[in-house]
Length: 335
Image (cartoon, one colour):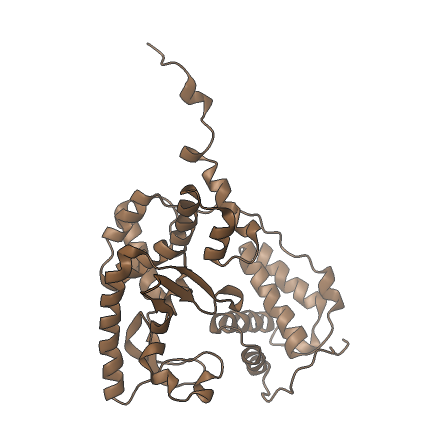
């Protein structure tokens, strides 16, 4: 295989999985991407009898992907993620050209209509959530934020004066502004008061400091301990940072909220396959139904391509917002 001309600094790690982690962090990929890529590269290596990836090529990659599709029956998104991990490994870590990769079939993604909750269904779910989990669900539905964007919200990014929330480092690393719902002002202020109690306790215990993006913790060593950088939804207990090993306070775990949300959906008896992300779909549909233009909704959701946002217009074409069924126009039948 031919060496790639892509300029990267020499890797310091020796083992291939450690090299993978090193390159991912150099390129500022998220921890979620790191975990996923390491998982798939490890699975690829084990599938081929713990052979080093440098000794393998297109035939082995094709065999692994075929096994995922035909034996494991993974979803298209999972298949694409595994392929992306292997592309990254060979191109960015091992530094080789991949002429055979162009011949590997990419799984085709069929765009499907998302599940959408009605306002009544959202209200029923919210009634079965408590405390900060209810507030967090209200925030997702009221702003259209992704769950990770809401969890990573910092004190400094909530502007009560302008009724605006700044979403930092959204998908694609982009910032955007969303509305701060009027009905959530009091709840968010109370949430910040509870968060400040935890922040002050951390300061008193000498454990002040939260995770800082990029190299800000080195550029501004004391910024991580500042109230402005603290989480709006902090976790009750401290945890170990998976990359640095530092013990500090993390934001609320996504699994904690997801479990609570799923329990609430089950208790309502709603049969739709609703997840926390469904609140984002429901937000988009409600805003479009209220008459706002597609470009505005695109900006609020942080979509790079308006075609992604257009999927919600298809949702509105069915049911109450669409064509009247001829069955509903038939005269009543007498028996």
